[in-house]
Length: 247
Image (tube, rainbow, N blue to C red; front, top):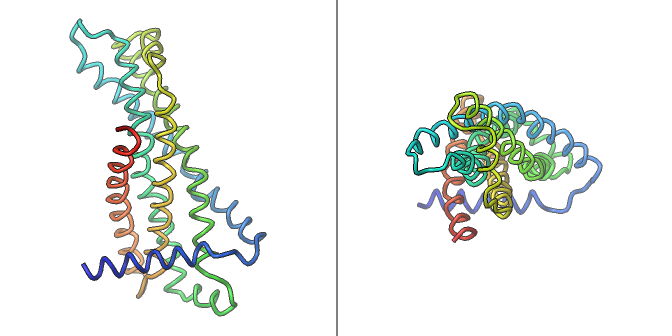
């Protein structure tokens, strides 16, 4: 318990240091554009591939569980739409990015720590926490909602392709199901969750990397721990936000 309190306190102290007023806005802007590409744009392909297959699986499973004639086939499209929007494209994609983006952030900052590059930055009078961490947090918070929107669109498209190709639903019924009683707030809810998850992924991963001690082996362990902690926090925050926003 004492260790948890210590880590939590040190995390919030680091976040306070991260969001202090930047010394040079131009440098931070250049870092931000770089992180948008590394942490955001480079994650598009994995989100697209996974969303297509998950959308297909959701459609087929919904079809096989609603084979009773009393269920209209447009429910397949409706089930695919709501599952992807409410849960998959925000929470499951966040868990995937916790592994890809989170481990990348921890490894990068952890390597800089063990090779004393962060110490060198501090000796030059630069706020190393803000310089290294803030652009990563801002980049993920800005770009991850776009990844969620891409995931929603591609996931539903994958479900439509799978459903029509397998012959479990007609194209007209699937499209009608997507449109049936659509609630725009669900998309807003998903995007709000994504912003929270993006902050958790980037800040916790950066924290674990920033305070690494030892060598390359410890950097690897810190990356693993960061992914585990991020996954647990994402699921816990998901429960809280769902209760607050959908109840």
